[in-house]
Image (cartoon, rainbow, N blue to C red):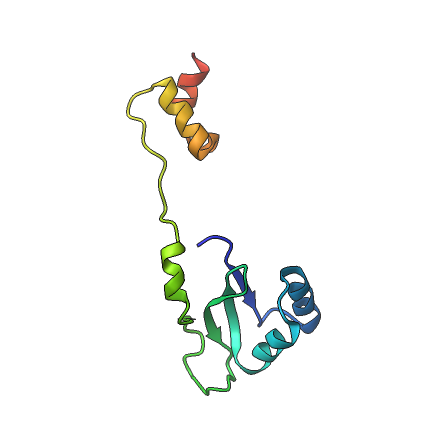
Length: 122
């Protein structure tokens, strides 16, 4: 899932939380209330949808395994939006077009030293 934002309430004081809210256009009052009563961390999508959380030690639910990461029900609807990791294809022989296609698709950092040496020799 791309661009997931983690808010670690345990590390943000009210001024830092306000700056975060300004930057991401989140409601300061809502997040401050969540920080004070319930959550240790919340993972959000950029649109503000909460996808996962853990609780603070003294949460309003009196849950003792507060560090366990839990997911919001909407998380499962976003699973289909996640893209699977696609490794760069392995080049078993050195072919200029194949290596250049790999660079174009995955960046020049994706080629091996041997592929780089091959291209330098061309």
